[in-house]
Length: 411
Ligand SMILES: *Cc1c(COP(=O)(O)O)cnc(C)c1O
Image (cartoon, rainbow, N blue to C red; front, side):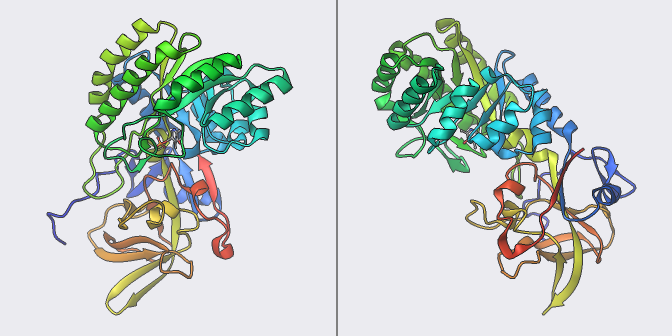
């Protein structure tokens, strides 16, 4: 192995005892017995709490932290998050049901996303959550539904800013986008909200996802606050909520380092205080999915065959792309890279070998590891894919090749 090539950031969120990974304090092989079958996803509630509490120490104390549910909508996870975050951001009536089943008050829940159906909007209005308006047509629909139902709609405007979030894995603002209302059209939209007598709460600016560059996030946050400041003179009433997005990333691939959240918090304090003194009723919100839950989850599958083809060793697993599209490299990656992986029941071994780990699907896309150096594994050993708590199971093509579903547990 070339020792100078970039390595994965060490995965230190779970303890190891007797050469086995512990999830929620439970040895992995015992957890597998408890679940009853492999593959499965396991999420560690303590790690989620550590991420939220760690972030609170770095961010300004009055910053609200919301959980973006699409990262992991498992009801037990959302229930757990309800007790440690300040609000939820969701993007469908299905997610809204899960959110409202928790103790989170509707005032602290918002719904974003293009293409909200009238039926969903009616449910959101009745629930009393804040709807993030994504187009002028949606604005008119909300007003009509509000009249029909007799319930005032709470709305915020999602702004598609003129700037982009630099160095982001996925850009969701700036230039021409399906998300939000273009910055230059905002004064008209705000007038219309006033005419239609909707309850205006404020603004939402979300510029992108999976960013590991603190400077890029700092720049986007400062521009978002400046933009809201500038638009506040057009608002029908004082701003109550300013959601400045998120995009905080986690390290997945060799050479990626952890995000410097302290630098972000330090840089946010000044602009945030300034905004609040000009808009005393406003709370400032960040919405994070991946950062809060991504590192708390593992995907566990089992070696069911081991073979050598023309000099290369293959571990064939009973899980893969159909449960974990992102780890296979087919969810938004341009060049496939390996997620961090371990043999969960053989965490350390003097005997190591370079292996390819593939799933059971009849397609060359079903890869979990490409030429990785790992402890020598045998049939029955447990393969652990780290960083799997976000955009895992619900972001995967579960029906592809009619394979069995997988379990999810929160420990
Ligand atoms: C997807 C999404 C998020 C969550 O993004 P993460 O990268 O998981 O933090 C937050 N807000 C909006 C509007 C989103 O679409």
